[in-house]
Image (cartoon, rainbow, N blue to C red; front, side):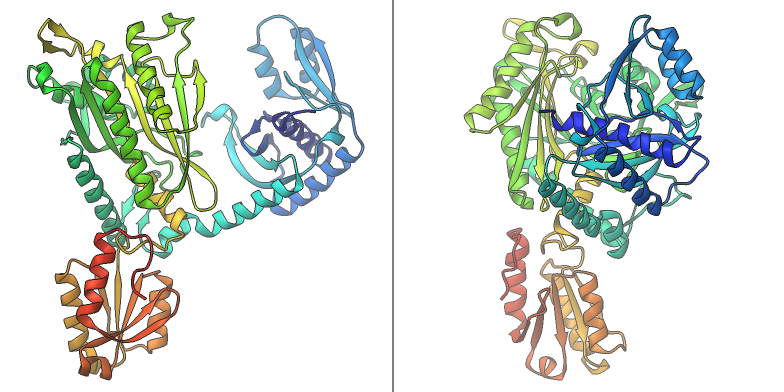
Amino acid sequence: MENIETKRHSCSHILAAAVQELFPGTKLGIGPAIENGFYYDFLSDHKFTPEDLKTIEDKMKQIIKSKQPFVRKEVSKAEAEALFKSKGEDFKVELISELPDGEISVYTNGSFTDLCRGPHVENTGAVNNFKLTHTAGAYWRGDEKRPQMQRIYGIAFETKDELKAYIKQQEEAAKRDHRKLGAELQLFNINDDVGPGLVLWLPKGGMLRKVLEDWIKDENLKRGYGIVTTPHIARLHLWQKSGHANFYNDSMFKPIEVDEQKYQLKPMNCPFHIAVYNTALRSYRDLPLRLFELGTVYRYERSGVMHGLLRVRGFTQDDGHIFCAPEQIEKEVQDCFNFAMHIMKTFGFEKFKVELSTWDEKHPENYTGKSEDWHRAQAALEDVLKHNNIPYTAHAGEAAFYGPKIDIKLIDAIGRPWQLSTIQFDFNLPERFDITYVAPEGRKRPLMVHRAMLGSVERFIGILIEHYAGVFPLWLAPVQVKVLTLTDAQAPYAKEVCEKLTAAGLRPELDDRGEKLGAKIRQAHLEKVPYTVIIGAKEAAENTVTVRLRSGKNIEGVKLDEFIAKLKEESQSRSLSNLFN
């Protein structure tokens, strides 16, 4: 029985066959299997529409019903080039020209032939439970200077139930889309005048961000981190010394020249934290030294991959670096893992996945650092997971050349995984910058651990918006209480209520417009404010409020002091549920 990846890849060939039959003259790009499905890139004079997807899908079903065998054939490089030149498939010819001399495989089903390594299912009839979803633009080979193609995406699963569940999840995801909710809730804006991938935080989004950043700063301080602030640019020399200018060049913006010196927007905070470490001669008594920064970095992302807050060009990492002695790493890794679990609990993420990436011990030449450091670091990471009875997936040989790591992926409210916390050793930068500490037996090299708990502030807020569907718990909500007046006569008392809420450390907003009460309530509901307070003549006379919950339930005659005390408790405890009922 073929695995699902093989079926998905076979689906992409069936898609291409259907498109070329329906739209003659269409040229082929590539068509791989991807997570949950497949896609194929096409160059066509025809602009594919949603209606076309239904037509293409029907043609694919005909091909599937005919059970066309997938036939593999080995040909020489010259034969492959001649075959695809005769078909006018310029992109395939380009790919073939880059292959080494020797046998090249092509697959044929029906009258359709494609360049492919395979494998495929036995015949098209083995493919089912699929759906075409959408189209997108895609430059050939990801190069903006090359032709822009049309990419058709599809999904495919083993069973019809899995397909239905995924479609339902995607429908729910569309309702929760943080770009849509971000605009509706007036949290952030991205526009072409400022530049793609650069976020403008609006006042309400700025408040949400402040609350989150204050919390993460306090949590780092509790754990012994020193807060540092570093520049947004540095001399290009720093990035050459760190290796980023070579290894990371494609993701960096071009340098700028100042006073005949080249400067670089920072893509990482790490070299700056090493510079902080090097501001003093360190003793073993100073270790572990923990540094933390909400550091804004800039990375060049291609226009086709940016996505709201989740993929941007300027973002703020909650970056931490730990410099420690070898005998201290077990405790430091455990503390980092505990921190990640605390974040999960605080924000209400009940499920998560853990992945451990280690080196290929048979090829130490592909890695930097000493063998004993790799073994000790990997053992520390693995021991923490085992000690805490955490199931994990091990990826041998997939560690970066500079160190092993743990990745923690949260599972959101509708079952989607998101990369969150990373605990990563780095044996490269301490060597490059020759950092040391003085031990009783002489100078030694500290071990360095990168750790990002939230990943980036922008991305984490995007995840939170979708996880909560914009319905933030009280402690995170930009506006916690909306105060509504019935008539102008209640304006003085309403202002007094807002002043007392503000004095208690809460975030109220007054709506004393001359609108009907129903319209004000609907507006507060659309803004997803946790609590709405309604003030009429009776409330003003009795020093009470009528409390309206997001559920629509009204609670009348609540003493103002009682209401404030309950909200303070809910906010300060960072409760995820409504304490007032």
